[in-house]
Image (cartoon, rainbow over all chains, first blue to last red; front, side, top):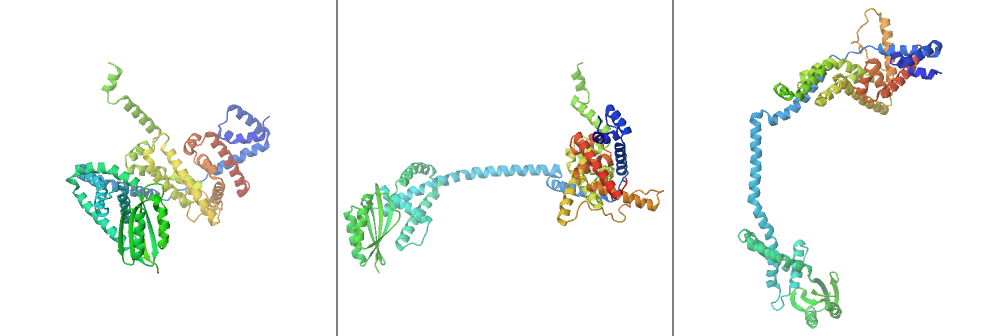
Length: 307
Length: 222
């Protein structure tokens, strides 16, 4: 049985004439007997008529002009940049191609001219470290004990001081200046790199592994401050103590209100030294405690007057 | 003489011939094809012809969708500008007018969204009665035999119909404007809105039903 709801759903299609013949027949039959659906169809027709009869609205007379002016403006802007760059093609294209070629050739020329020098500079950077070792060996160490670990320690210290020019005590400042001079000397040697390039490359090759081993076995440095009433007496006592502990490379330096003693000592004897130093005066230790199992330690003892 | 030799001796290759035939078919179907081709080659004057041809229809679609004359002017300008920018991408798979209508409907839809959010912030409703300024319909053709009263009455009715159209949801409004006001075929509407035929029909049914109820409310007896 045909229901009104189904019919109403099909009414728009029926009205437009796009229903199949079977539906058309069924709807037609139903409409003859159903007042409600007939009214619904009438309403639909009237609504369609009202909508369909809506008058066409004229667009503003300036619309075409405005649209076209916007389009032309847009096109001009686009063409403007393009024309600036490439037009007239027969003149600008060859110029641009030539300029590009010139840039490429210049870049290649510069690269080829500077490339070897850059390489020489890079290899020369490895040499100063090696030279610093030798120069500093001459300057600092005694001829009797040319042990590598000491130098390594000092080099690392020198590097540290180079990086961190912290407010230093007079002794440290002297050390820094000395080391800076050595580095400068070596830099001037390195600047002659172009001439002795090949020899240096060889040297650098041989120096690099040496430096690596040096860096891996650098001795620890401990700074100890001892406060004593009599600096001179305490200095001598400390020197005796170091001799008894079989310390090497003992070096004393008298500064204003301060005695500085540096020495190299077997790490096993550090504890013993500490105990003995306490008997001389009030002791203060700087630096991280070393691994006391093996190797040497550089000890820097600063004796200052007890106020 | 083989077929290939014949082809090679001719002016066009097979592909060229097929393209020529395609072009001929397109131009036979779409009156705008020639002008579109010229536009694609950068001829702005050809686009002016297309603007003049289609501006009224596009304007009416925009006007019926928004119910606002100024907005419709803006929408049409934007739609033509977008069409010009994208004309090189137009491959002629549908008629130019169908493609352009799609762009206009999209712009109108976006503008409606803007208006809706603006009116939401300002506290006014898009469904408020459509206010028309004096002279707004100055461009409308005058019914010579109608009296002034009849003209006013007709104008009033049309305003009410437009108000009812404005009250429809945007998705129903689109199909109603395209089908019942502009008379596009279902196939064309499918192309324009990129939705299936069944969806269009069901939306149209709903749109007409809602519109009928609204008109009964505002006009009394239809």
